[in-house]
Image 1 (cartoon, rainbow, N blue to C red):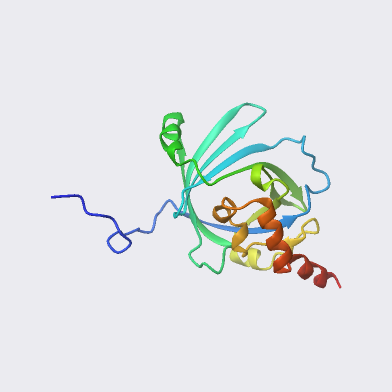
Image 2: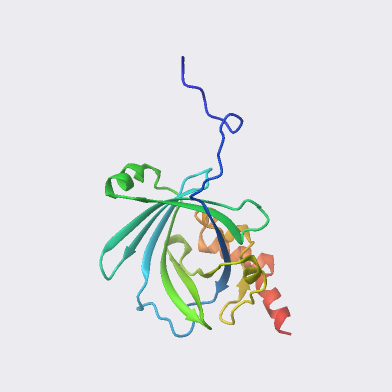
Length: 198
């Protein structure tokens, strides 16, 4: 008997006890926040998104130790209109496993990640390099839905882009900074910020 072709109709994806809910807000920044410089300690991250899936291979290098952590991740939003709540499952890989999966190295994003504490809250500040050089995003996580829903945008951000699909990693991997800049201008993101100040 031959091996059946797998399709969405005959493949079941059980709810995983290893998956967890990730609650995040994502913000567009003009640059690193005041108090951070490019020379500060950061992690070097390379993400490879596997086309047509929710799968990502993430390599994280600490320049201070020259040590790597490699994660094979599935991340998706159960509600496509609410990207602030995602389900995420991580599997940590050793060197051989990472090398075996390197065949999927496409749709790449590279960024330097800084950690920034502001008003008792930790932010991950991502300064993108390569094709997305010029883009700076901040993310912060929440334990509860209530905390997420009532959180106000920090003053060092210029727009909340949490639910803008163009700023999701999988989509960003297909774009350049010029593409993103055009989206920012056409979407009126910066005008919305100005209107909120007036």
